[in-house]
Length: 309
Image (cartoon, rainbow, N blue to C red; front, side, top):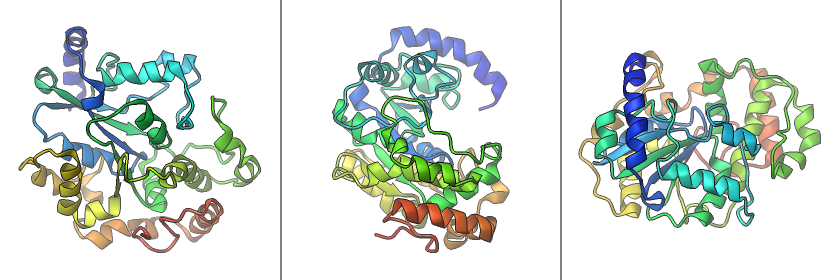
């Protein structure tokens, strides 16, 4: 959606939100890494009638409340811990009561007016999945979309928004930062942007991937499977939700996401999935491999483009 129209419609959506409340447990949630495929998937899921899309709502830059409670960009909360302020914040987000220009940037006013449930796309929230699924008894299991860490980091570096990252890994000063503190010596010794990004991927996903409830209390979807056999993965998601698959969804499968430039999108499956092998240097590959091996991620290695299942 173009920026001028977004600026025009936002005040109306914000005003309407005072009279419109969504049931938090009936929303459809998508969790993924930045550059992990969540925009493409959310475009497909948004073909479900009477839904509207909330865009990446756990952004500390957008919400002063998050900064006040020291909620971090990559916040982790142990699943059995209580954090009432965070719980209340999520309750308001999932009720549709904390809309901002940023979070409404990918919906239009007509879809919002007609919507009976929200599609909430979370980036940087993967480590929260075990906690949030214990706090909310979701009618529809959240989707956990996982993409090869080398592909994610390659896309981040190519995108440009991550190129200014520092080579020194910054341990976040946030509640429940022990998952970072446990690896402080290793993290401080990485010394490269690409290595830090891989470490961030590992810290954000290892706890959730290795959780006993993985692919039980949420639906784990590998990006590589979604690209390789989208109909099968879509059918699997909708069967778990007990929702009829919209016919329109199969048109969206063939479209690149709104955040991908058309000239960078390949319709050849293996070519699309293996682009990271050409885009990262040997030096970057070696550093990323070192970090991946340190965290002992069982689902991916430094050579195969597909998940190891």
